[in-house]
Length: 456
Image (cartoon, rainbow, N blue to C red; front, side, top):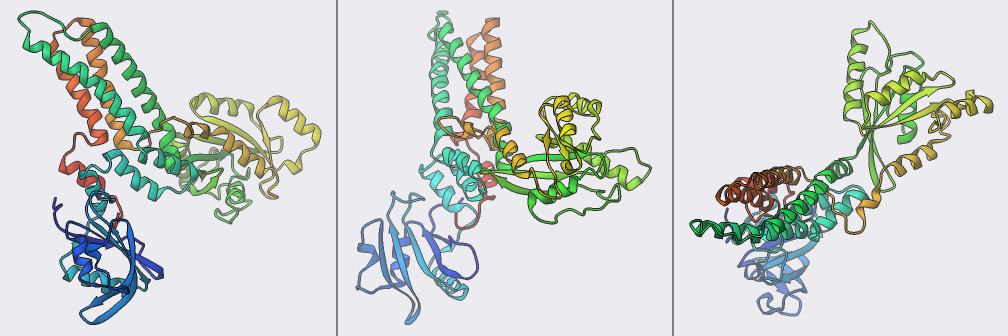
């Protein structure tokens, strides 16, 4: 990795806009831009203080390319920890390209994906989990995913992991010290205190691991399968929730042969609705494939909307669905409520206490369904001091750390020697260090930052 040269990239999306921002970072960033910049007040960028903005023109020899604002950030007080200059020019694609090409001819090279944030990590401006949170923040498309990314970027998750690692490292040092006095048979590490620490670390790791289930669905959208027999109004319900004609609606049973998916935001959380093929016995080969896909989608869903219409409800089938998927919330919904009398509604409510009534066609009861969905998701965990893991790499490292901690605990119970204990402790420290970047490889960094956008 080349970290001593000067890099440049667009910090704003491609295309025409009111303004565009071009970012330059490197030891010579200020000098390079200063050579191309003519201040309206005849200032030299080299002599200006950090965190100042200056009006002037970018000039290619004697040709004025644009009137710009130039922001100066001097090392180490910048995003990357290096000298950084940001040029705010007009948003013409032609102007952007002309300034970029001028900077490339003047000694810069194009930044690779995520290279500005990579340099921030390498220069100690943030740890690895905070750097990954930058990408998550840019990609956040709901209030919930934004909250997770902000908390991680501010170091909440990193601090928790670093504290655990430091405590474990202190005991590891004492156990390593015992190896130097193995002939004297002494113990520097209090085994009872160490066992209490291992129990506490295990509890924290399990809590973080369990939070991944919540964090992952919040980050990617909560999958909800709409299931039921043919012609109960599944496609109509999907269209009503999305407020558009997304799925084909027909009176012919078996119209939906494949799953139809789309996403909406309710109460700051993304929900991914999946309209499935109607469940029934059929000889149609294509429809059979669709029904098989229905059960695949149910397996992946976090919530099942079990739909029927009128009085056509099979309590046995509803109970079978709940027994088959005990870890999933099954929400029974009676569609076409307009076909029912008040007495019939009361009879159904007695049989199914948590039943919701609606008419997907008339869109009555849809707001109540949306409110119910929002209440089923506990977004309260996103506030306060709770930490939620939404990154699969962190999840994997936490699992491996917990596995090594369990090995240490088992070794303690068996009374194995300090040298064998220290091996498992070092492995636990290694996996915890992978999360914050205390332990890294070029391949790991390359894989993480290649997923960033250019200019960040």
